[in-house]
Image 1 (cartoon, rainbow, N blue to C red):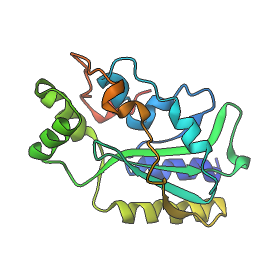
Image 2 (image 1 turned 90 degrees about the vertical axis):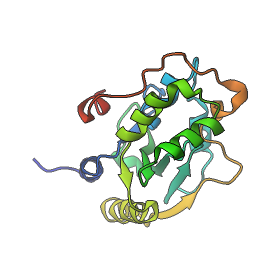
Image 3 (image 1 turned 30 degrees about the vertical axis):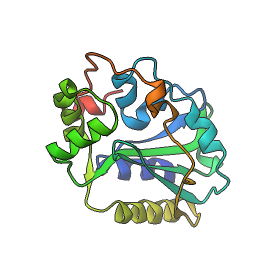
Image 4 (image 1 turned 180 degrees about the vertical axis):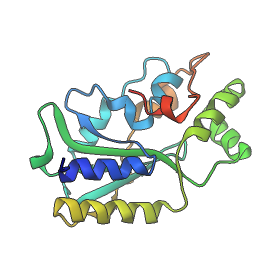
Length: 195
C-alpha cells in the first residue's frame, strides 16, 4: 500500500513522538493542540480563538512557531488543499514539545508565573515529564520545514506569529479558574496518544 505525502508526513512526525494532526473544521479536536492540558487545568476553557488566529495568517508557505506561557512549543503549517478531506481545515498542529527537560525549579517558577497553586506541582510535573523534548527547537523546525517542502512541493519557511498574537486567549489570568483536581498526568505514552 502506497502512502500519499500527507500520510507519510504524519507517520514521520509520529515517529518523533510529537503529536501532529489536522485541525477539524468544526473545532472538535482543538483541545489536542496542547494534549488537553488547558481544558483539564482550567474550568470552562475554550480553544475557539485559535481558528481566527490561524485563518488570519496570509502566508501559506510558513511553519508558524509559538511558545506559550508554560514554555511549551507548537508549530502550525498550512497544508495544500489537495490533501484535505471533508471536515478538516488546511491547518496541521505539531506539538506540544519542550526544548530541554524542565527542572523541578523551572516547573515551580512557571507555575508561580501562571498562578497555578503549589498543590498541583505533582500533576504539572507529571505533564512535563510526559511532554516530548527536543534538543533544539530551531533544528526540529528546520527538519519539519524540509520534510514538508519535499513532500508537498512548497517552499516552507520558519516564521513566528506576530508578537501581539495570543494563541491561547483564555490563558490570561482574568479568564481562568484552576480546577481543584485537574488530573493532567497520563500514566503512559499509550494513554498520551489515545484519542
